Length: 357
Image 1 (cartoon, rainbow, N blue to C red):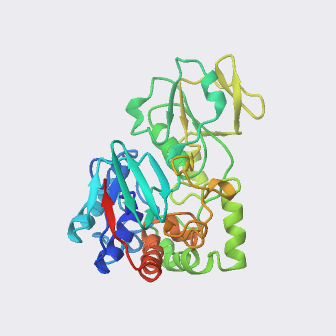
Image 2 (image 1 turned 90 degrees about the vertical axis):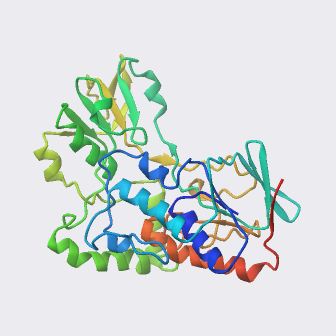
Image 3 (image 1 turned 90 degrees about the horizontal axis):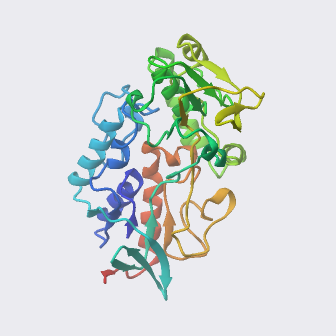
């Protein structure tokens, strides 16, 4: 059984189908690809189509194009249809536990049992918003980046965008066209070339090689980058929006948002900002509370070795940052991990039957 029907779950499903295994993919959304359709309207990937394909099917766009989120959603839906993957949509899993030698998966009034379970729900699905957000004046419109779609959701007046990584910078530039905008937070840096430029096209193969072959959990430098990236979780260098773009948009870059005073957000330097909107681009936390098994380790992530959970034979995770490499959480990087997991399932169990109760 595969829990999660986005890119990671579909990639595992592809390899399981190649083995003629009996399996099902459970997806909480009502349509394959909806996890992408629900993101903000102008979102594009940070990798070109050349590096966005899943096993067995290249991404249907020119190799140097940066696909939109809707193109990704449609690609995933087409992928599931092309390979006849058994996806059950609208099934939200509430609990995963073990019963004897098998796993029990509860989803509403339905219960499944399976010898093997692959958790492909994604790493970050619970928004991270600071506790002091509750103290903001109720008149201030607050949105997490996961709920932001476009500037029409915002009230007239200033916008404070909290978080200066890719999401925060792109949303700040977009809303600055219609609202006075402040961008708050640490600068995670930016890539050395502008997305889509000739230097970017030249360097991209080298960057992808680093992300998938050098920065791995098997190398000292990969483990060092992993630890710096995950503790605490931080955004990757910006790929499309640089400091010059932020300045050219008239956005004021301010210190970290530290709290609330008299209903308004305050900064590390004590400045009080009078704004009508706050967009929290503060990332997500991983929530494994629905898994009734002792699997959580450092950084809140499951204790796993390249997706295999040693303490729970038959349980696997996919889509984790640095599961194998930096690219493991990217659309084009899950295929290799999916092949490993499917191979482990094939070699480690004699009977992979599944029953629905």
